[in-house]
Image (cartoon, rainbow, N blue to C red):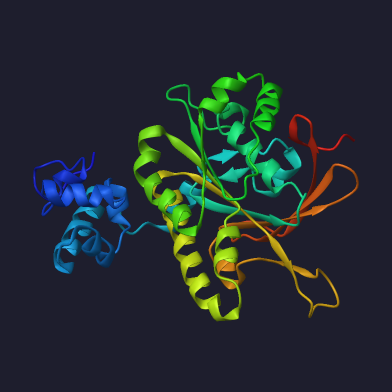
Length: 327
């Protein structure tokens, strides 16, 4: 139970020392409505959001961290946390094995590749599969319905695919769709504002998966040319840190898709690279490249993950979703 150093229990941000009703309202409006959100914030962020001195913001953050027992951990404790990390099945055992058991919570997983490689199909499949019971590869515990958030930046969401994928697992398609919170992001500022709002929505709605399809399209369109590159990268970096913080605070799996662009200077090997440059290279926890193969087969390759070996897996895109190829 979260407690402070004194006898008063700290359960909400209103219980924190130095947080009055007016300050609490400002913090909630700015996306700092939980102890977890405050605990991982910087003093500068809280100061700007609530109009309070830096010193006061520091005390509030310190109290939130103490209440949540955010302290040093042993490497063994970290190991136990990692071993107990929750995974969402992709629908393909091959792809799950490549990802160490599925798409992991508290982590950003990026799927990037050319058009038609299966990025959006995987996103649709995960939005369905997260609602499965734990023993079937989802995160539903039998208590509160599990929600997925689908942030669509390119108009690629199709309810028909959700319906077909739900039927595969014997789920009621309409009930599955009721548990997917869809929103179309109209520009990069709106995209970031949506994620800010999720810091309040996620705990209330039991959101366990957030999808951004695709994460870079608005940034790429709004900041063209080398003269805008620095501004674009800084803004994209802030957005990725937003998503990473959301994943960590609320034990959410964040899945982003990304486009690729041609590299005219490459004469050997893969002549494409993911949009976003070094910002994308460092932010996601797992980066997976998708490539087309024969027919409906696709090849997934882990190109960067601190806890996974590099490797490849073959999966197929069927009428009912992501699956393994028939032997």
